[in-house]
Amino acid sequence: MKIATWNINSIRARGERMLAWLKEHQPDVLCLQELKCTDEQFPMLDVQAAGYRAEVFGQKTYNGVAIVSKHAITDVTRGLNDGVEDDHARLIAGTVQGIRIYSLYAPNGQEVGSPAYQYKLQWYDRLGALLKAKHQPTDSVVLCGDFNVAPQDIDVWNVPLFAGQTLFTEPEKAALKRLAESLALTDVYRKVHPEPGKYSWWDYRMLGFPKNHGLRIDHHWVTASVAARVNAAEIDREARKGKLPSDHAPVWVQLSEAT
Image 1 (spheres, rainbow, N blue to C red):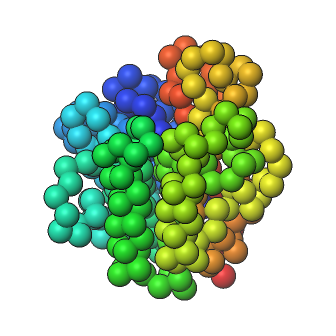
Image 2: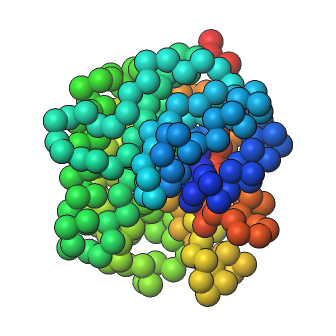
């Protein structure tokens, strides 16, 4: 089972890229973030023609997440549903072949200390509370998407440059750690690839991609039963090339059959 995640940075601008990637790579599941479209604007007919189905949680202009799958998606939920007033379309979940899959687009945080930064930290803790309420560490769960946090020094191209900057501050890393601890989750890409120089996002400016001046902020965090099945994981740098790409590359993990 191949589960991919991709911050597409506008499905209306890059829908053809997404469809071409589905055709070439044939993932079982593709989690999408930053759709920047309403549910009605999502290219559902094109996705179905490609042999997939989709569940969408869209929002005009901003945010938006989806789960695209070759297989049935059941028990779909949208949002954190924790009673907190929040109109951001940042989380969708569904069950695919016995695995509970979350596609998430974590808040960026903007400036350190800003209301957006505080919202980000609170959002992480709200998500952790949701996971604790809904699951046990023995469940099969995959959280994938744009986490907007680089967890370790190895996940940034220049540690002194990013130290204390949004996406790499200690409170953000601590929030991600608390989230992982809520279900004893493993960052499985890093389990497969402990080497440096592996990033999933590059700034459009300053030749960030050609110079590989990037960050690894797109992840799969999974429970132990899923981690035990992971036999491959890759960042598809090729999908970041060409005309008008997303600033993120797709990231995928491959699972062996359940025993």
